[in-house]
Image 1 (cartoon, rainbow, N blue to C red):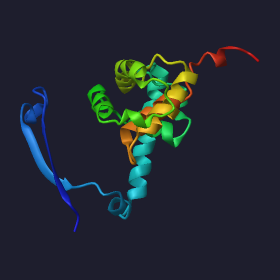
Image 2: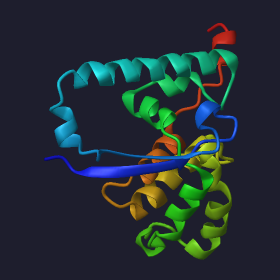
Image 3: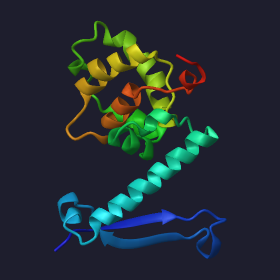
Image 4: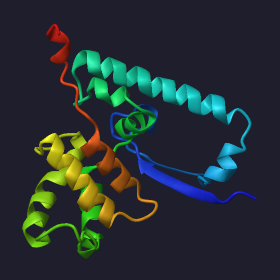
Length: 174
């Protein structure tokens, strides 16, 4: 017997016949082990993965949403690019961290204000950190305070460590 969950949401006012209504339905709660046993699940995943890749390719071509060619470097970067966490979700994640676990940071009280200012911006895939500092931040701070499993930390880590390809290298000959 699969567990059930209920989803309720309000449709925006311009949402057609359901506009302005609150819709609610029961559905099978997500259980990865059961999901992976579902017939045709591999094809379902493959189609959604390819649709995501197609969307990323289009965003790269159109220069939209901070998407870079490097977002197609690995499964990890494709998944991280397709997930979306809001600034509020990232800020909530930050409020629940035990920052004392980041033992490789000399003075966390000085670093925290910068993290509180800049990490939520990763929801838009932008950060002011040079690549080396972003990778160090991911390794010494995000990984240290992450839970297991921790989807928000995984998203932040991947976003901070993904090599950015600005497209300029292909304009120069070697």
